[in-house]
Image (cartoon, rainbow, N blue to C red; front, top):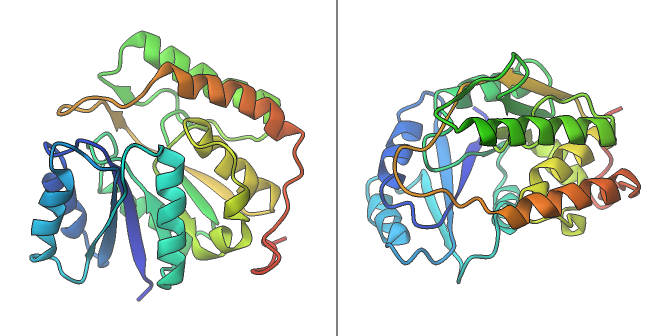
Length: 248
């Protein structure tokens, strides 16, 4: 059986973390979870530590000091997972905006359908978002349209944060060269995989706004993405030569 791990970055997610972990561990296929907590003052990491007694082989925790950014959390998780031989590495939010059941569909797209990167897409079949204010839907939808136009990458949900990477994709990337650390991180990772020749597949999902806790989104991360995408369009994307290039 292949090894699968879900990376969940957290900051003040005490209302959600136990329930999201239980949902993932109830799935067939032996999913593991790596929680990367950025010093949550609400005790999120302590809850995870208590649950490690219940899930000693499946649940892992990295604690970092202070809020260091979503992108750096995932990069930390990628290195951690690659060092431990995981075959499929997922990104997922802690707040149930992503349905844990869809992990199975993302895995299938990579393991059975040959995708190097499977994307849980809100926009590949119209707009599939629940309980977001219309202003945020418009901003998110047109952000993806803007990225698609600038980068000429035919992905409808370029900013999606619910994805599955095959090991070979992350090994082929120079993860130390990733520049964007906020909202633009998701765009840069997809673009890099695409430029390296991997197949990207969008899997339609329904995105549901969080019911518990507070959003961590801010205006600054959108600014980074806007200008970063323009720079990304003219940047040379090189494979990690220590690992080998992507598929042709």
